[in-house]
Structure formats: C-alpha cells, structure tokens
Image (cartoon, rainbow, N blue to C red; front, side, top):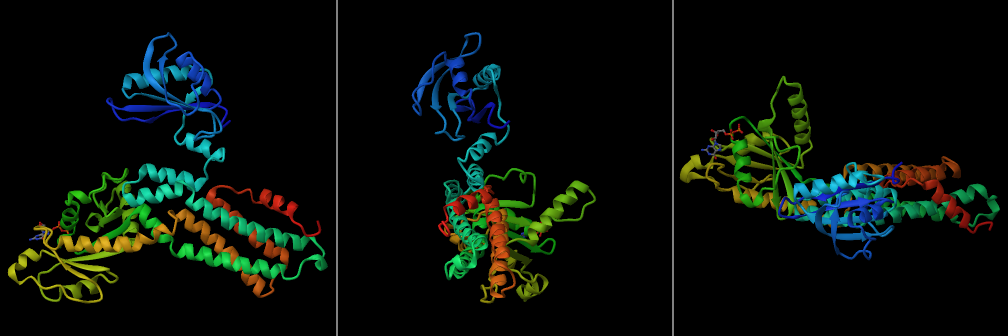
Length: 449
Ligand code: GDP
C-alpha cells in the first residue's frame, strides 16, 4: 500500500569530494534514525552532527542529520535526511544498514514526489514544475519551472475551478428547487460568469505556445539541398562555445540536433541533412520522429549557397514558408559579397567556413526566441498536456453557451456541461473530486435553506 512503507534513496551524488544526501521518509523514519545514531531525533529542522553506525556498531560516518516530522516535510510524512560524505563506501554502508531496518526499502523512481502528491503537498502541475526545475538548462527554463513548482499554474486553475463549481452549484440548485423559488436572473448570472471564464481560458490558450517554447526550446529547422552547407552551418553555430547547452538525455547520440542557449532561452537547431531514408527499423523510427519534429518546427531556415544570381528568390520558391534565407559560402564570392537586401523574409549572407555573417544570424535568432517566448511570464502553460486539458474545458463551456443561447437544452444538460468542464480542469492538477466539491458547496447553498 502506498505510504505504509518507509522508503529511502540517495538524493544527490556529487562525487567523492562532495556531500551526498540520503533521505528516509515514512512511519519508520524515526526508528531508522534511532538505529543509526542510537539516539532520539534531534530538534525538528535543525542540522545536528551525529555519528552513524551500522548494525555491528562500526562507524559509517559523522553526518549532519535533519529531522522533519510529519506533516511539515516534502512528502508530508516523517522524514530524515543524512548529509554524508559522498564516497561510494559511505553511501553503500548506509544503504546496507537502512535496508536491514524493519519496514524500510529503497524508493522507486519518483516515489517521494508521488507521496507528496498523494498527501496533497503538491499537485500534478507542481510535480511537473519540480521535474522541469531538475532538468532546467537555461535561466528562462529555471524561472518558469520555479514559478510552476511554487503553484503559479495551480493557483490559476484553482480559481477557474472555483468559478466553475460555483456556476455548477447554482444550476444544480435550479434543478432541485421549484421554479418559483429560484431567484430571478440566477441562470443569466451563471451564463455571464461562464462567458467571462471562457474568454479568460482562451486568452491563456492563445499565449500557451510561449510557455512551451520556454520549456522545450524554440525548434529551428535547417532546410536545403545537399551540399549547400547545412551541417557546416550547424557546426558554425554550435562552435560558439558560450552558446552550447549540455546535450539533453536521449539526444546525445542524435547527430541532427544542437542545443543553444541564447540570452537564457533554449533553441534547438535541427539539421535535415541527418534526415535520410534507411532500411534499419529503429533508425527509421528515429527518422520518422525527426521528420515530425522538423515539420512542427517554430522556425524554418532555408539554406542555399550563394553561387549564382537570384539565389534567394530561387530558395524561397523551392522552400516555401521559410522564415529566413541563409546564403552560405559567401567567402567564395571574394570582394563582391552582396549587400543584404530588404524583403519579406530576412536574407543572411554567411560563410560557415570563415564565420562571416554568423553573428548577424545568431542575433536574429535571439530576437526571434525572445519575442516568441517572452510573454511566458504571463502564460504558465508549459506542456501540451495543459493545453489539451484547457482546450477540452473551453469546448465544454462553448457548448454550454451555445446550448443556452439556442435554448436547446434544459438546465440539467447545462449543468452537465459545467460538470464535464470541471472534470477536465481537474485533470490538469490531478484532483478530480468534482462531485465531493459540488456536494459541499450545495449543502451550504442558501436557496430553500
Ligand atoms: P550539407 O549537405 O548541406 O549538410 O553540406 P555540408 O555542410 O556537408 O557541406 C558541403 C560542402 O560544402 C563541404 O565540402 C563543406 O566543406 C563545404 N562548405 C560548407 N560551408 C562552406 C562555406 O561557408 N564556404 C565554403 N567555401 N565551403 C563550405
């Protein structure tokens, strides 16, 4: 049963010279602490130096011990943290001793956070924020994740949900009470409230892409004929040491993506030179995904070499929908390098070989990512999951307003639209106790006393 076991895990490992933290959480945490230190827990939330011993009395380490009694801990359960010297030998000895303690077992991945969720310490959006914070690579990603972890999205969703539940309770009241007892204008009041709510949700949906761009990075695909220098361009961009972000797990061996950090925002460059036909099944699946990613990119760079006249118009014809044209190998033109020309789409003359023009291209990319992700401060939707849930909610509300406008259905159907909307909103935070909530509100509802 979740929550009945006491779990432990190594929460950080910094190598031999550093400090590691082993966290124990559950009803037996105090017993484990007693077994290791021979003493009762120290005062709550106060770092205390203690000697840790194994079952035979051998000293494992001198460690800082922190005691967080329930419910004031991350998981909401009794929790103890051992800040130990981070060597393999110390960690192993501590783990071997903990596993011998009655009722203790190693934690499954994500189990501490799962317990925090089960105990109402955080909701799904906050758990996602925490995961994002751990994976954050750029300053903007860190800021966004922190805001989400601290409940930025949860507070907004809670406010929306309260409004929905209030609307639902008013409608339920209309169903259960004789018509003459329903205050005048009640349904109209609900309709007005739902219309306002829907407009608010739509505003968030419209801005949602910026939150996702901040979290996932702006995807920029590099398109063009073979040999124009797409891979060289990618390398030239990635060679700016300051711009390289450490590879994201799972893409490290993927040769077609490069991650850049431009003024704190993440940009992923996708080189379609890596996209080719293959008979290998696994590689083919990788290619399929890469194609899909390229198709869904935020920006398309059309690359050509600038040998010959009118290349930019030829490139735009060949690659419609390009957001910028990059004419490479400008070094081959010697002194007659063409001046940049004004047009619908910016044109960059660059040389991946000499680096000429690359800075201008990077500046433009930076401006684009800042413009597209910049409004994320106001839009906390960071995942497609959030957008889909809100999409579903707005559809229910639209149906509600439509049904009401056309007098197409009775109040019970209208109330059902609201209930469905509340349910889908509950999916966002992982709290789907709509019925309970309705019951409470309904009980306190004053109509009819
Ligand atoms: P891709 O097939 O589009 O990815 O093209 P590559 O990046 O593999 O480059 C094709 C050829 O063009 C290689 O021989 C590169 O060395 C050369 N090349 C790429 N960029 C430049 C450049 O800016 N100037 C010159 N002179 N040659 C380049």
